[in-house]
Length: 349
Ligand SMILES: [Fe+2]
Image 1: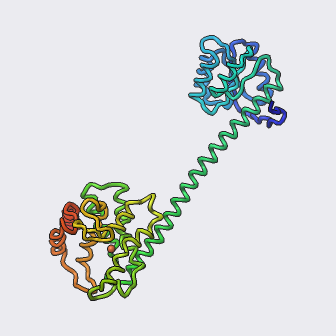
Image 2: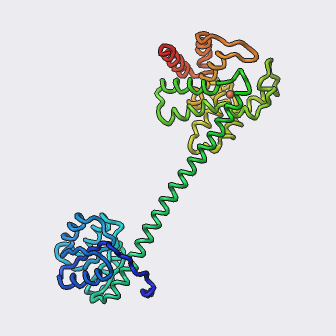
Image 3: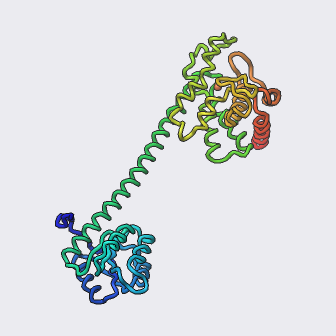
């Protein structure tokens, strides 16, 4: 037997409780005992009446109910209460010593089961124990929900800080080179406009925006002498530069769970439809669609800006070149969507 003397005295204050018993004498006596413990009591003479009272007063912390009542028996009432007011502690009372009924009540979620006649001290101790358990359950749930929310908020903040860091890195990387300044932001804008005209929306556009902005982040690991070399690259230099998609994907691995599309863009923006791209030699639809879109935007921006090894081309020539390599290097649908989006933005400008 648990030592009921150790139970915390309940601080009922103005807490309400509902007493349900079809015998007015028993009900009054229960009400007196509970009022002495500080409860504000509501009364009902049957399960049906009790449910009507609950409809009116809302969810009380405590219900003390008889088992044998007309209209709806104690078990039926207990089930209805558990269903509608799961945070209420229900203590069941019975005049009959039936083990199976007691077990049944506890099994169906009653906080306790008491046999009549009940002494004041016993009732008060059992009530205190039931309410202490209820308070712990509610507290536990509160802590769990608060903790989950805080963990989520902190994870989001960590990701934000990480993103700010890599965005600053991407800009720092471009700022060192007059030829590529603004490249990532333009690629990002072109890619988003293209994706939008292909029907992308919401979160997938956000992924493309960020992927466009960070697509070359892996170049941070490429030597500047190679990055800015005006002439043709040697095989070794080409190997070094072609490592940037994989390196970039590795750098951005903290985004793997929340933004896998960003990682796909970074890894696959140099793949070609004919399988002659890098790093994986993917073909056609094996190449993630987001990466195919960014590849078009990347190619257009590279052609329309001046590079150490060549002059820039006018937009209409660059567009014609995109169409010429559509189907071998670039995705034809993405190229057409880009051309359409670009024509529309020109009209608006
Ligand atoms: Fe690249």
